[in-house]
Amino acid sequence: MVTPDKKVRILCVEDDPQMRTFLLAQLKARSFQTQAVRDGAQAVDLAAIFQPELVLLDLSLPSLDGLSFLRRFREWSTAPVIVLSAHDEEPVKIKALDLGADDYLTKPFSLNELLARVRVALRRADETARLRNSVTGQDAPRPLYRCGGENGLVVDFAHRSVHSNGQEVHLTPTEYDLLCELTRNAGKVLTHRELLQRVWGPDYSGENTYLRTFIRHLRRKLEPDPAQPRFLHNELGVGYYVPLPDAQTTLE
Image (cartoon, rainbow, N blue to C red):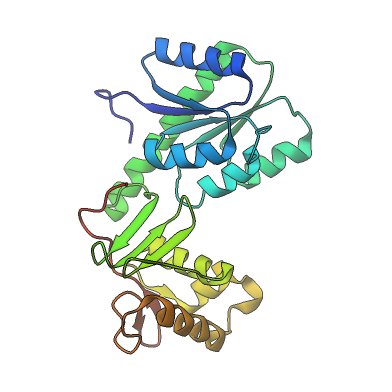
């Protein structure tokens, strides 16, 4: 949440060195706390550490393109993303917006227009955060879920990795998506129908046996004793949930 007494963190993911230098200088001159990176894969790591409150994102990046970064970033962060791109084709804009971009600005652009869009995006994010906090009492999602201490269950959303009992656990893409839905909604019971629709799609909304099979697979991989689950709990006849994260959970 944006507050008047702290600098807002903005991450610039920009391949062009001149544009990157320009953005950093202009944002710092206006008292924003900024970090910049030119590589999409490095941007994923930096975003997890820096936890930006807004991202300025170029699409043409080495290693990992901007759309792929956006897809990864949206797995754990709701921070607004403004795309700054030379691509003005409608399909590219639609793809970026569908993946979770909040705004799209075509290069070249004026500095005043960019700053106006930054102000609007931050204001909307602040209002959304206030509403979320008043309704749920919870802050925005963090890129790390940890339950049960160092040797418990750890889900690193930024790097799509899972550890249990201190060991990395290899999950199938569907198993990981199912676990992410549960851990992103920790403490809340998700119904069978909700989980099936979110992970597999609307055509699977009645496949409860299918869901039970995947929960059983996850318990075998993650639980010290699958018969006495610590993490993946069942609400009989309703759905599944995982406990709230440890109170002292912080970023590595």
